[in-house]
Length: 276
Image 1 (cartoon, one colour):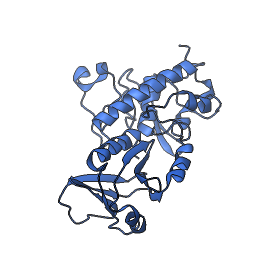
Image 2: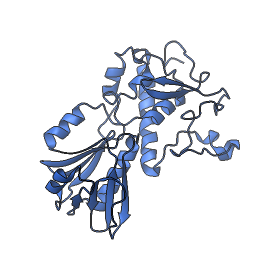
Image 3: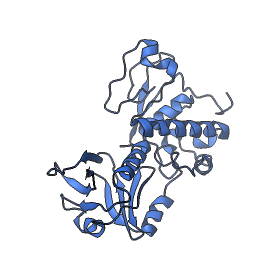
Image 4: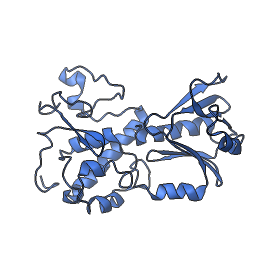
């Protein structure tokens, strides 16, 4: 599933290509046809992301809400348009480019009130300028659930997915199973600050890189990572391979229906977290 940096990158791209001008909106597949006809030809006022949600704002009564889910994708191509390939849920055509949306979990027309309802269910997004760690901490600090489960709860923290979850826990040497309420507040502030920096880097590059300079392939002599998700990471999808820091075999288990990756040595339970 695309993580928050992907949606913010898309919003930035769509603002550049389409915002401030009329956009032709259709649904070649047909499933979004009625809603598409409402915004077809309107000026796109803005495109913005919150967590894993994308909003195309045409007016207070006409906002296209998209959640890509597991397989959803947008593609952008320069004009002229070509015949749709595959099941295109929504097509946007601007002055210079067109964009096709395929396979989203959600593609719906909403108004401002409905958009606010969606946002009200989400925790703070590290990529939003007005966000901070305190609101997420209020949920984390009261919970007996493992920190690894809480970081994937979009009501606690919006935009963090499986990759950032695994990597931020490794980078701060946190046992994934420690209850949220046992985490030290200073440690959580450090984790939040790190997440902000990593996710902003992801928006710029379009990939997730979490490895410190001293552990990069050209420094250590190891082969670069080969994975469709791209980026150099410490533990995500590296189960069975040696930890880049200590050499211990990276472990894998399932938690809340998702694969969890961690280093049993670097992330060993340490009692009270944040006091090391």
